[in-house]
Structures are given as C-alpha cells and as structure tokens.
Length: 453
Image: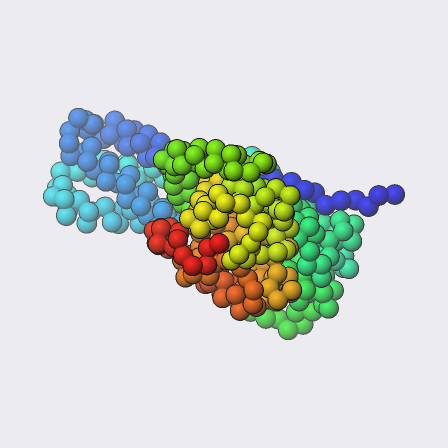
C-alpha cells in the first residue's frame, strides 16, 4: 500500500489578506462619506458651503490616518469580529480629539456648527461600528476561517492539529531532516508552498536538524517544546496547548514583497524592450557560431529551496554542457564557444534571466542561484557551510551584494563560497528597497571584470 503523500499546493492567503485590508479602507471611506452626508442633512447645513465640506473632509482624513497609524489596515492584522468595534470606537474618538486642533490651525474652528460636529461623530460610530464587524466576519468566512495557511510538521511524535491546520507526517511523506539533497529539499519546498506558518513537532534529537534545514524556507517557523510546560518561560507562543519557540520570521513582509516585485517587473520589462535588438543579435550569433539551441537551461535552487530552470544564452558547445554545474568554468575552457567567450566576458549570457524575473522565479537583486552540483575543493556548497540554505529564503537574483563586491566566477576554494555566503546573509539581514536600487545601480560597474569568463 502506497504511503500517503504530503499536500503539494496549500492555498495562498496573502492575496486574501491584501484584499481584506484594501476592502477595510474602502469600507471606512464609504462609511465616513455616508455619515458625513447624513450628519449634514440632520444639522441643516449645505455641502456647498466650504466650511462644512472642509470639516467633513478633515474629519474623515483624520480617522483614516489614525486607523493607519494604529495598524488597523495592516495586511497581517485583519480584525476579528470582536476587536473591530473596539477599533472603530478608539479611532473615531482619537480623531475627534485631534479635530479641533487641526481646524484651529487651518482657521475653520469657528465656522463649524456643534450639531454637525456631534452628529458626524455619532453617525460615524454607528455606521462603522456595525459595518466593520460584519465585514470582518464575512472576510474570515471567505478566507475559510483563517487568514494564514499553517502546517503542523510531525516527525516521530503525535499532536492533534487544530482547525485550519494541515498535518504533514514526515515518514508518510518521505521527508527527512538530515537529507541535504536538492531534490528532497524541493519536495519539502513544494509541500510547504504558500505556507505562512510551520509548527514543527518532532523528537528532541531531531530538532537541531529540522531547524537548520527549515531556516532556508521563507516561512514563519515555530518549534513545539512540550517539556517547556515545567519551566513556564515568558514571551513564548503556544499551539494546541503546547509551548512554542519562534525560530524564524519571513525574510520579507507582504508589503516588502509587493515593492520588490513591482521594482522587478518595471526594470525587467523595460530592459527586455530596450535590449531586444541586442538579444536578437546575440541569438543569431550563437546560432551561426555553433549547432544547438540558443538558450541553455539548468536546474537551480530558488526561493524556499524549490528548483527552477534558469535561462542563459548558450555559451558552450552543446555536447560539452554541464547541466549539474559540477565543473566550474575555467579561464581557458575548451567547452566555451567563440561567441560564448565574448558574451560571458560582457555578462550578456545572463540577460535571458530577465524572463525568469518576469515569470516570478527570480528577482533583479538577490543571492545568485547556484547549480545543484556546484562544488569548492570537491565539496558541495552545503557540505562546506551549514548556513548555506538560509540564503534561499528569498528569490534568487540576477545580481546581488556578493556580485558587486567582485565575488563571482569559479569557486575554486572554500573561501570563495564563504565570502559569497557572508554577503548573501548580510543582504537578507538588512534588506530594503533602496538597497536593491543601490545594488542594481552598482551592477553596471561590474559587467566587465577579471573574474567573468
């Protein structure tokens, strides 16, 4: 009887959180507008009068600003039904306190009827106090009861999963903590795809191996420590009655990933259009220079250790290509064609990766993806550095911090890998959209350099 396999496609809920946050903003705007019109009618004022109109605009703007400042619209803080009404009360009361000062500063404090002031507050409380809890209830139902996709990973222990949690048994799913193999890592990556939170429950002797392994995945990772019940530690999480220690958070928040993806699409899309003549000329030159396809495809390790096929212009003779990447290119390498030597020297062979970026497999800036057979001193990269897989918690990049520091080309010594890994981990720990822009700008200066061959 065949063992039950792990689910390979959890439902991504990031877009649901994003739409819920956007819907909450729209709901507040509509509710405040409706409350303003109702208050205006009850107070007997005219919306054509610039005084009341400006007052209604300032009040609504203050409520939105206060709500945003308190995290009401955060994509990771979609309110539940009970807290939504409380948020409405606090946000509107704070805006009401700020309103007189704001109107005084703009010179309109003496032009607003008290009736309009009070009715606007009451109508806003009534409309949003009813609408927000109903919205929160409907949004959570649409999300299946939870805005996070979480997995309970079990290895050698039994824990009853709570609602909205998918349990994966390592034994049944052929997942192993000690198997540092790209194919098996890809299987784990596929099992955890779209997962927001992983709760690890395993035997104590296996925890270090699982923790080290899962650090390379773009997930929130927590480990169940049942024995911590006796210690009663502070500031720990819990799951199904078991204390947990949070080990890792996602490398980038949803907001950061949206910014990074937008930058990638703008730059990659523009580059493909502007460089299309160069891409076409290069493709023709490769075809005329030697028989074989124009593009070279090779499995590489991507985000969360999932394998993907990187695209490059073919620079070697077809019969001598190395799809595993076990043999690094040497300074004098007979496998390289005449055209290949030129495009490698100018980094033109990397340009097809713009399509990997557009497809969402890569980013413009990030740790460079390595071939699964890459070695230094006859050792695989992950055999040299235990922290190697941590660099895969974000999408790989066409360029990165290591590349602009000159760490590229063949990895002949262990130090070659260590230098690149240190730069990659530094990039992850201090990521910002402006660092990506800075890396991209600096990359132009290292297209032609001594280590590119």
